[in-house]
Length: 225
Image 1 (cartoon, one colour):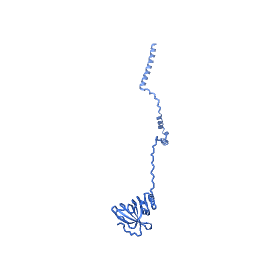
Image 2 (cartoon, one colour):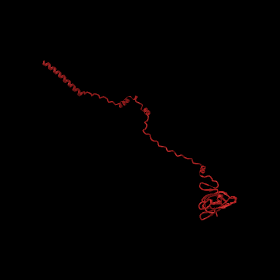
Image 3 (tube, rainbow, N blue to C red):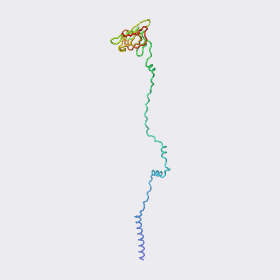
Image 4 (cartoon, rainbow, N blue to C red):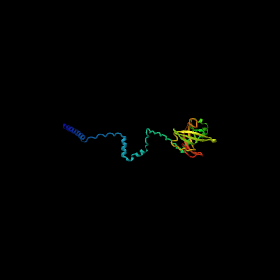
């Protein structure tokens, strides 16, 4: 009876020892694999992975780039204000310039804007004292031109109505120069300043121009003495 118990106990012990040795050898030579960790949620990479896996369903990026509107800049550049171009006035023709610059010819005895009395021969020789301090412009005939220390002394003749003859003496120091071409009996337009109101003195020449006219008795001789 004791022998039978001992045999059963030995068999159970042997079985337990063999099972334990089997577990030890299994863990040593065939270790168990760790449980797989749950995948993380990565939506950004999962979409790219799907596109790489299925190239046929990839979106047309070029078409989306064309259809997508360009973002407007936050601030638009301020355009420079264009300055107005100067208005160019057309240059007037020579005839227009002459008409705009030259004043109209005044009537006889009329005083112009520059205080020059033109065509007042009769009034001047009748009352020269009325023209003290004025500038006059008359057309007279040349008689003589005499050289003086200061320049020239000119003598002119005026034949008025009723065969009246008057003479005028005019002094010059800078207008005629050294050798003027003056002819006896030729008509000249002279401008002078009357400082004394006399015909024999106090008259200063400011302009002398030949008109091309001459008296019937003119010989064409030089008036210079």
